[in-house]
Image (cartoon, rainbow, N blue to C red; front, side, top):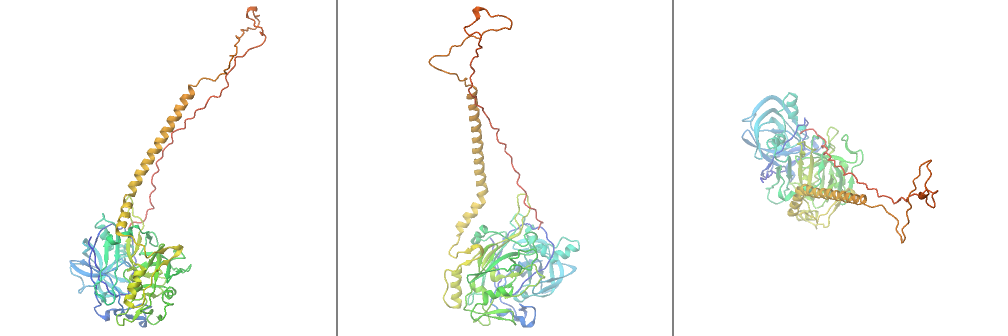
Length: 563
């Protein structure tokens, strides 16, 4: 297996756009990346609030991560941020136009929640994770303003649905079908492999080596996280034809207190009123949530306060915050180091990684969940499984918790001081909880995976044997009934028996008008004698017809639009 290591650094960023939806095929592979520090503090200013100057702060002061990987465009490698919150590819090179590319006259602007890029739609051969695309559409940016560029990134590689791609939308409006997203083309290049991607986003730790490795795969699950295959899938919202990797949030659990969504709080039309629609965005370092929920996290912490000018919470670094998020009926703990990360300028100061911010009514999600949560899980984004007829099912997400809350408490206090906690558990809705003492080993996970793989064949054998037993039982029953019937037909009529048989008198012949002769008359000639008739009941024999077997055709799965 080829493993993709990540460039990892601090960033506060979220991405989104809109477009058409196309069918996605399948592909496979992975690679390595490294960690980078910001190149200049002047490029690392960004807003976490409404955009007012007073609500900005330097990302250079935040010890966090951004995840980058190299992509080859026109024979040249460029470092790009891997972003599940968008679907377009843009490159800002040292020259414009980029070498070895075909530039069109179509000018295009990509707008993100934080930042933008403007340039021309261009085409070039692209290679990513050893998969070659002969002609990929992207934006050759002439100007750009995006936080990722301040950390050595040359652009952003969107890993969302083609339906979200504004490049595809623009080209489709012009009558072209060549604007499909990077992942669509990667899957189409190798349709024999599963069409999912996975992330393992590792964290940096204060005072340790700056090199931080994570992993990103296409169509392959890393061996140490194979247990994710047994986890329950989390449907996207909407379930069919989604624009983004949106899922439903059930509850927030902070220090054993479970808080649910107030009915009617979601702004997303058609979503369940007691759920929040959240976007899983690898392109954002932090989580943006409604202010009342963020206050539930930091409001009861001694010494914590909301910096209204900056738009985030200041938290004492020695305060351990134990919390978890319930998604799709499953509880996922967060590492306390990610709930309140240190600032690089002053290691005694920490900030809340959950940022109080209302996203407004223009978005199709209520929360934006970033890397501060995603580092605590191994995540799989599946674009939809294919059935036996080649029809693609609905997309979904699977998450595997990689945090042992007790061990995380030890790691926290090793860096921040104090005494670790033990016996940390989280109980969500319906009593769903995470037991920190229970883990599935790789051997058990592989065994479960093998059982799942061979279970259909085992069930088929069991079903065939059951059918043979049923048929044999029916044949035996029919033969027994027929044999019993033959015995009934051969039975003689029943008659009386006794010590002295009853004498049988001859029947008198009698013809009207003809007198009987004296020799023919019996002593009781005037009485008619009737020969006794046996009244024994005969046994009715009923042979039931053989049951008719009817094979029901398997109903087709609901057809969804093609990716």
